Image 1 (cartoon, rainbow, N blue to C red):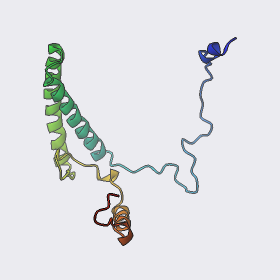
Image 2: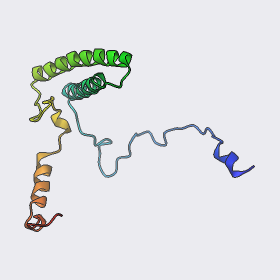
Image 3: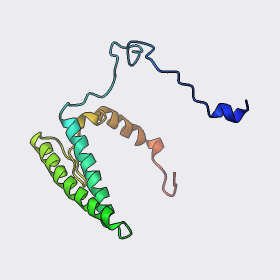
Length: 140
């Protein structure tokens, strides 16, 4: 058989877990080191953000002149529906007293997904060290 024949053969081998844990704990007692999210406010923030992007894309499709009229019609329906759901999700964020962004589109934020403030402060301190400040006229 030639090499081209071997390149097209798929051999099903199956899959299985090699250990009983999803992740092997290296040096710590916890198996998972994921960021802990609030079980309610995290999905509300994700839902609001996804509905915002859905509405924006649907509005862009709705206002594209070269788009098929039927697609533009369905894009308008999707934009209206996403707008209503986005409004409801924003109201849920306000009801849960979630923080909102300071810049537009002012979406509710999942604060558990934010990095530790001490980490941000240490990164800022390193970047603001006198050796890292660019000299006037330098473009680095």
